[in-house]
Length: 69
Image (cartoon, rainbow, N blue to C red; front, side, top):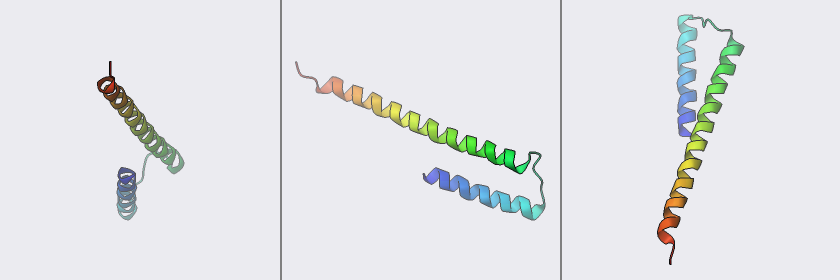
């Protein structure tokens, strides 16, 4: 969550700088925003998948050591 907020803050700052310098993006604003939203969702999904995978591995590893018999 913190990384998302930092990214949002950095994006706002860069956007303000672009506006002050009157830099124009080659992509239409709506398409650019959809692309950024896709990158954000992809990052969240990747993070969630990696966390789930790590939790699954830890569970299996600990279950091997806790078996008796």
